[in-house]
Length: 105
Picture (cartoon, rainbow, N blue to C red):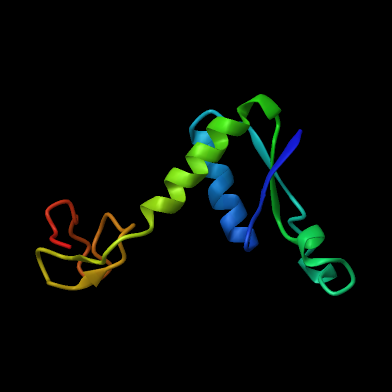
């Protein structure tokens, strides 16, 4: 096993683990219950971590994580149906539920 990254929080660790596993990269989330030890342990030792089962998957895993994180950047997207502004990573409008494929940035 090889550590891929320290996550900002437990939900981020599980989301990234799910994204990686859907791409065929087996991972484990460690330190899932260690947040209570922050203060007793250094933050990086108690933070949730994503570990690769196969160290040979590291380059591909880093590319997947970079692609996932980049998807959440960019300008907000306006819904073509209701005009509501949505975060760039949303595929559906948070307000009316319509798809944002045709929405203008």
